[in-house]
Image 1: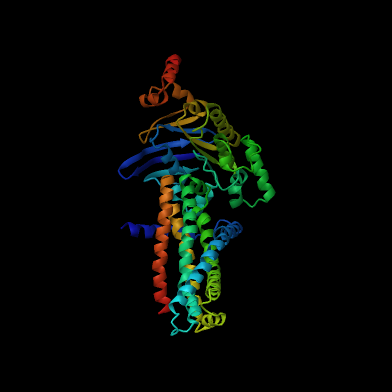
Image 2: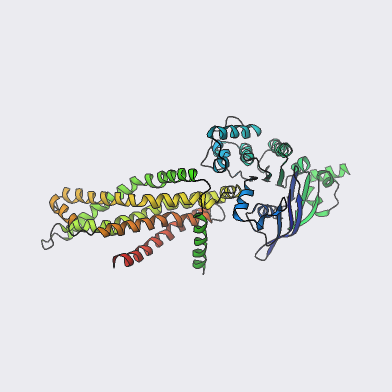
Length: 251
Length: 246
């Protein structure tokens, strides 16, 4: 479980995060949703240690990340898998080398054991016959899958996915959502998905935090979000006429 | 003020770069790969520049000593001294900044803006140490060898041009090469090549590592890296000369 308490973050005069507290639960798909510029990426960067909050705590199983020493942070990060929005695959390496990267650095596995693990991870994300290809030779959906395979290669306890559906067609987007969800339940990991895709919210949102102008504005799950009366959340979810019609019908 | 900030940030960057590698076996492998990428692949350009630099030096010296007052062996002497003291270590360093420095800066800059460096950090790996330390070690080790090769090729180029054009006899050239040789001048040259190897890799790496933005910023940082590294080489060249030769 990851818990954040009273997180504040500003860039100069601009307040990006204001007093945010939340619990990301183990074995669940925890979603951070909000409009562009609401602070989703910043709070994620504060949690994984890419940006230091001005104040507040980030607790991994009760241990404050920002009070850990360098070695403790490094050890913790080996338990974090991160799927970047653009994939962030190493473009000078093949798919196999990308997935093998962390194993090569941290594990004492033999070459055969590493290849077996790579095969397992690629198989888990339903990717076959792409091991020897470079990232620029595969499609956007495949890149996301390779990103997930790389993220789970070290059996992480925590999986972060930054807008996993961006740039994907609706069918592939749903497949990626389902894959993230399956992996979360199968390995009982704490998954945090940053998204503004409403399909994802309604598909996999077990535990949702809605950010609005840097504040935590609402939290709940995918059932609760359908019946919320929170004006800003309603405006965010039902921004299109199509979604507004759905809301009217469900009410 | 911005200059002082950059110096401070560069120092912090170097502190991050020179931390213990995650895995020595992998580090050694990365150093060897960088030796091939940065050093061995630079041999052709270093060779071409050195041969023609030595050839031009030889003919220029011969053209200015043709009156009969200055002995002909001065050509060999001047080529040797110019090449060892200045041309090979400094000019080759400036050429390598253009070739290697811009490549390092744009590689790291692209990795930064495409979040590849963040991906390495999140895995618990010190990205500066993992990506930059092998490059610095590789070129610091290889640059003296490249410069030594450059010295030999320049002298050979001077011989072929000077003797081939009939300006000087092989005997005079060879005599000039051996005349009043001070071994410390070679040591001085090697000290410079070690320091320049460090600058050629670390300064562009610093500019690339801290890029913010997109492709335009990557290109700007690459240009800035080459300019700043060249200036640093020229200033340090002067300081080392003042310290070591006087």
